[in-house]
Amino acid sequence: MHVYPKVKIWAPWNLAIDDESGVANGVTIYNQDLVTLGKRVVISQGAYICSGSHDYEKTGMPLITRPIVLGDYCWITTEVFIHPGVTVGDGCVVGARSVVTRDLPAWKVAAGSPSRVLKDRNWRPE
Image (cartoon, rainbow, N blue to C red; front, top):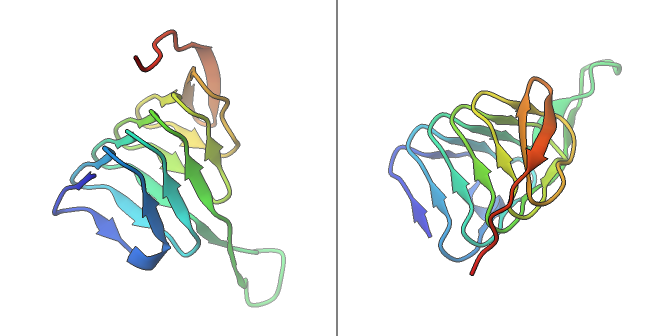
């Protein structure tokens, strides 16, 4: 595991990181709920992982939180925003500046705002 010194982690006790994962400078992990990084996950510069929001339909807009799971061998590229409650499947690559509002399947390449699957990722760990 390698977390660079300029990473912002809101609640370190709500972060689970598996072996050989890396989190780059400028990443924010706003983990009001559990955020789980699988094995060999890479989160690139400027990404924002956000497990909390507010229920704007209720008076006082109470806090709502949902866990986030980034599966093994994921690459969350530069300046991606991950919404609360999202699971990114094993091996998924999310393109730069994407906004991930829903779960993404394993071994795909996704991008956009909101993100959508573009193609298969053909690489597999050896």
